[in-house]
Image (cartoon, rainbow, N blue to C red):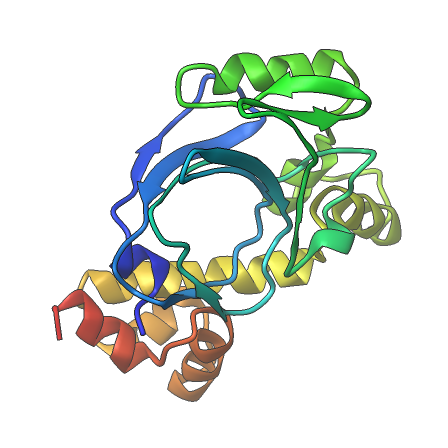
Length: 230
């Protein structure tokens, strides 16, 4: 079974909005399922399939899981920056799950008692700006500051509480996912496993292996072989 990055062809775009990490587009592939890896960011995903469309809010993913591939579908996603959250729909309860919002029409959905047009590549920034103005989307600058280690004057407990509220994760959990992502990036460069473990900050190769099995659903050797086309 392939990871999403191995199975799907993604079109990634940056954004002018600091609340958006990136947007992406892809479509179904002829496979029944794929490995969905751990990710610390939450997303809004628009799925268009056989004349219908829906918007799903997906929380952060704390471990790798197996997910089905919907047939004949196109997907557009907005991945939000860490610290950006919906006060009325915090990411914590949505961790490792998702919530599909009620459909209003074939091109719109209900959120906060208001009908919203489904976002797409051409209006994602405007869509997010409107959510902010409506009070449905907020950003806590303490979160990116905490990830940089720049939170002087705040207690550890206060920082952890605000990180949890805005991300659904702990600082340690975010760090573990980021370390696994860095390890995968190093494996893509063809580095030896011992070097990957050292540069990604693992105590040894066994810790690297356990981490990637949990967060990526593959061993380091399997990730490296996939990158080589094996």
